[in-house]
Length: 104
Length: 175
Image 1 (cartoon, rainbow over the protein chains, first blue to last red):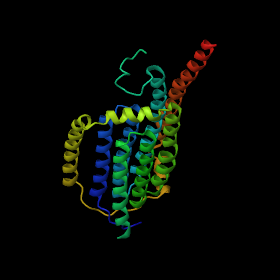
Image 2: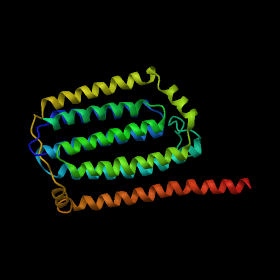
Image 3: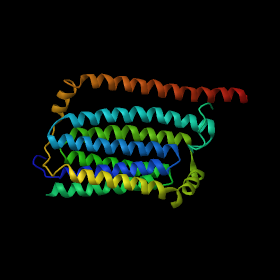
Image 4: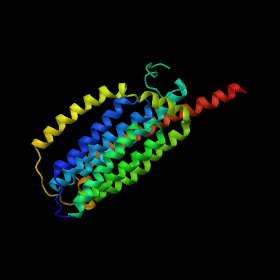
């Protein structure tokens, strides 16, 4: 794959489009599962920007930050989905507008 | 030249699949579209010379994290009622405002990107280089990541354990 000429601009363009779509999803959905999915999309877009920058300068740092983002995403999803189960159990709905009291 | 064509195809697939995932009413349908989007991003990783990141994207993102989502959606058992409610929430009057706001932010981002980075060729970074850097200068980051994963493990176990205990208590109360 050496010497391949993909403009960095275009990769960053895809990354920022994905991030914006994820942010839009985060704002328009009320279901907590879709909110978590939108967060995944946003983290993935940020990871794409990091890997693209790392590849641009030929350094491994971008892929290392990608791995750290992967770790954060995994931990966040594990705790978030545990919270989804609790919210469904206590409020009998996944609408986040109903889950606005800290003490159930 | 063929690889550059592949890049644009993969980017289009990723964007379309993500839009579809964000607008579906059924959670499982959205999840399948999201998996397609992640696979397309993995193809982009491979094309820009990061084969190790591509493998991790498929194994951990599309494999492990998405399976977690599938299991939780199956446990919640939302059914047709959930779909109807989602469709009701997805009216244009609800998403027009956020769409305009995120479009404005996207525009700013695009202007900044178009002004700074120029087109430069992409070189491959092998898994060996990544490993050497990961356990060399970045070894502290590995430790922090392991502590983060441990905290995630303990947190999700705590939340899930109480969920199961409540279930058992309620069953005993019914008897």
